[in-house]
Each structure stands twice: as structure tokens, then as C-alpha cells.
Length: 280
Image (tube, rainbow, N blue to C red; front, top):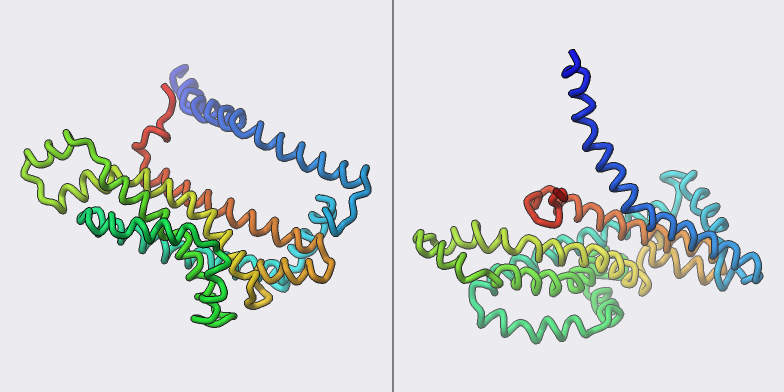
């Protein structure tokens, strides 16, 4: 009887311990965020900072809640989904192409070394230099013009990281696979790809933030009004700075959401990785 009573307690204790660890881990971040917002609010009120310079967080929150109450009729909500669509589309195309090209270039070192100068050159070009070109190619209101910019931004970091993961293999592991007469496909599937997964997801986490930045910056150069970049520029031009800041907040939330999704997929595909192991 006592064992039956104690069993649920024993099973739930690790969960409570994990919850306390998570709270202890995230509490400083939450407190700092709240502290920054409080200081921001007090500074604007005490020093009488004008709205066009820096609106109060409470004013931004009021505008944001007003947009959320409108639901599907809200321009901000529609703009958020439009920007998210461009960011996700460009992310999938760019990262997918980066991984595919890395699989090819890792097999032939000459191709990898030949493409490296192009990777450096593309990463050196500012985002704004691509926007007029892609708008001319695909059309100003076509989401593909924004996706193309995002794809260019995320392609080379993903490709470079994937190549590193596929090629930085311990010689002893390769010798062991060769001793078993493993085919190149078997070596790729059983050794190189598992070794490259941490490198790939490291690039994907960076690309999740870059994709949001690329999509919003591309929209600054024109597009449908129902996009965050156009929404922010038009509201700022109309001196509705609190509403403009709501667009910035939604862009930040897109980046955070995107990053969390990538992190959850990483945990799902790589539960064996050392970074996800529970401390003993």
C-alpha cells in the first residue's frame, strides 16, 4: 500500500525539479526584460521624451491590444502573417539549397574551395543592394522578391556550416567505417550526416533570425501595405510612432517564434546530443 502511494510522488518529483530548474534559468531574463520596460516607461515620463523620439511602452501596448482586438480585420495581423510567409519561404528555399549544395561540395573538395570566394563576396554585400534587383525580377508586390533576398542571406551560412560538419570527421571513425567496407553512401548516412547535424542546426538558428531581418528590410523598399516593413515605414511617415513600434514588436515576435520552432525540431531530431543531456 505504501509503495502504491509513494510511486506517483517518485515519478512526479523529477518533473517538479526540472520545472524549478527552468524557472531558475529563465527568471533573470524575465526580470531584466521587465526592468528595462519599467526604466523605459519612467524615463519617457520623467524626461518628457517626445513620442516621435521614443513612445512609452504602455502606449505601444495599447496600440498592440487595439490591433489584436480587431482580429482578422487588423492590418497589423495581416502584415505579420505576410512577412512570416516571406521569411519562412525564403528560409526553406535558402537553407534547403544550402544543405543540398553542401552535400555536393563536401564530396568534391575542389568545388567547395571554388565556391568559398563567392560565399565571402555574397556575405559582404548589404541586404539593401539586393532589394531593387529582386523587385525588378519578380515584381514589387510579389512575395517571391522578398523570399529571394531571404534565401540569399541564409544560403551561404547554412552551406558553410554544413560543409564543416560533413568534413570535420575524426580519422579513426573513417578508418573504422572503411574497415567494415562501408560504401560512400553508408558513410554519408551513418557518419557524416549525424556529425553535421549540430553544425546544421547551429546555422538554422542563426538563419531563423536573419530570415526575419531580411524579409522586413526587403519590404522597406516597397510591396503590399499588408507587410510589416511597409506598415512600419508608412506609420512612421504619418507620425503614428506607437503604431510603428507595434510592427517592430511583431517582427521581434516572429523572430522569437521562428527560433523556438527550430530549437524544438533540433531537440526532436538530436535528443542524443550532449547539449540536451540531463545533468547527472
